[in-house]
Length: 397
Image 1 (cartoon, rainbow, N blue to C red):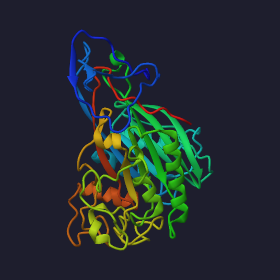
Image 2: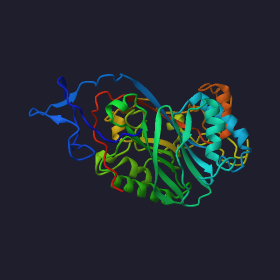
Image 3: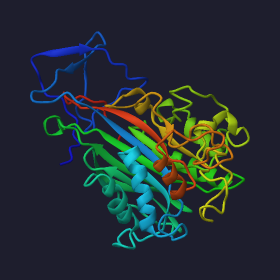
Image 4: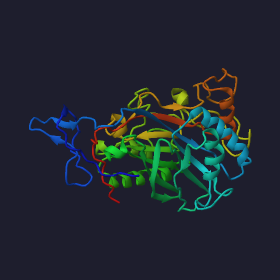
C-alpha cells in the first residue's frame, strides 16, 4: 500500500533536537500543516519513535550498465548473454540497476520479444529468485535502443514512469519508494527518483549537451528543490567541461545541483577533469572499454581498452546530506572490474598485471557481456520511526 501523507502524531513526551534546513523551510505535502513544529527559540521539536516501530538501517546498491545492444543479436543469443549477466549480478547484487542501450522492443510485448522480461527472468531472478522486477519502460522516440530500470522488490516498490524528454532516445524519470518496515504505522513514505540516460555519442558534444541541459531544465522546473534523486547511465562525456555535464553539476540554486561522487562528496579527484586525453589520471574510473580490440569477442562494440569515463551516477543534495532517510555512503562509488591497470588492454588481460579486482569468472563475464564497465554506489537507508520527514518537493508538471 502506498502512503503519501506526511504527518506527525501528538505525543506527551517529546525529544528536542536542532535541525538545519538550509535556506528554505519545507512545508508539508498537503500544505495545511507543517511537518515540524518550531519553538520560539528556533529549536525543532521531533516526536519520539512511535510504538511498535523498529530501528533498522538498510543498504541500497545502485548500478548503471551499458549492455551493448542486449537483444539485438549482435553479440549472440540472449540465452548466452543471460548467463554472463547472471554471473555479474551474483557478484554485484544491485538493488537498482539501469541497463542502457538495450535492443528496442515493445514494452507491452511478451517473451521472447520483451527483453526486459528476459533479463528479469533469466538473469536477475535466476541469480536471486523472486527478488527483481522492472519499471515500465518507454520508446516514444522509436529509437533502435532503449533503457530499462530494474529494482529489488524486497526493498523497493515502483510507483510510475515519466518521460521527461524524448529526443533521439527517451529520458525517463522513475519514481519508487523504500519498503520501510514502519510504513503501515508512520504513513510517511520515503521516495526515490531515478533518471536513466543514454545520450548521443561522438564529437562534437553539441547533441548530447542539448539532451542533458534540456532535461535538467525540466527537472529544475518540476522540483523546487531536488528530492532523493539519482541521475545515472551512459553520458558519453569526454571531460567535465562539456556543457551537458556542466548543466548537471552547476546551478544558480544549490538545492538543484547534482554531484558526481568521486568529485564530491568523496573529493578523491578534482575539477576540471579531462579523462579522455588524460586517461591515466582517472585510470580506476574509466568505463570504456573492457576490450582492447573492436573485433574480439565480437564486432559490436569498441576497442582500445579503458580510455574514457562515459558512465556516471550523479546524486542530489538530499542524498549527499542524508536529508530524508537516504544517504550516499562515502567512497562507495566503484567501477566494477577496473583495477586501475586496464588502459589500452582487455579487462581480463594478464598484462600489466592479473586483474584481481573481482573473481576471474566475473572478469570474464564483464568482458563477454559488454564493452562497458558498470559503475555502482551505495545508499544507506534508515527506517522512519516517528512519522517525521522533510516534505518532498511538489511535482509541478
